[in-house]
Amino acid sequence: MMLTPKPADTRDVRTAVLRGLRGRCPNCGAGPLLAGFLRVRDHCPVCREQLRHHDTHNGPAYVTMVIVTAIMGPLLSYVFQTFHPDPLIFFTIFTVGCVGLSLYLLPKMKGAIVAFQWARRQYGFARSD
Image 1 (cartoon, rainbow, N blue to C red):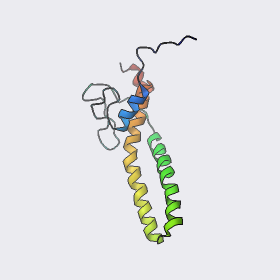
Image 2: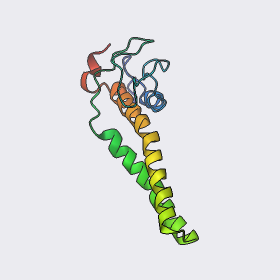
Image 3: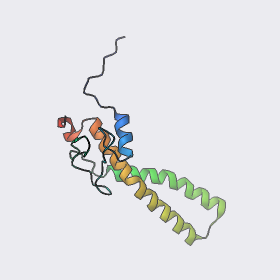
Image 4: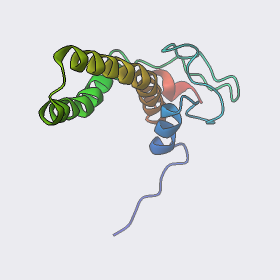
């Protein structure tokens, strides 16, 4: 059985996505990926890699909602069954928790999806070398 070598122009998806999760350029890992809360920079200020080709649509929001639901759903059930809190306090704590977790995860998911697209050369990233 013969293994085919990786082409020289492949990009490591895992490294790129981890850099994107940290909000860093998927190419160099040093420059910032986002210019604001969710706005992706046109290019990396360190390595000059073009980043404007991304096309994430609603992907980061969907992934964030799935993660928040997977974490908060079982936690909500456990707290309600175990501690029987007052409904107003219960609602307030979990509302703040869900909003806070969503705001924390949303830019990270945006960075991860942009980095994944960059690593897989999707959309305009194939022409950026």
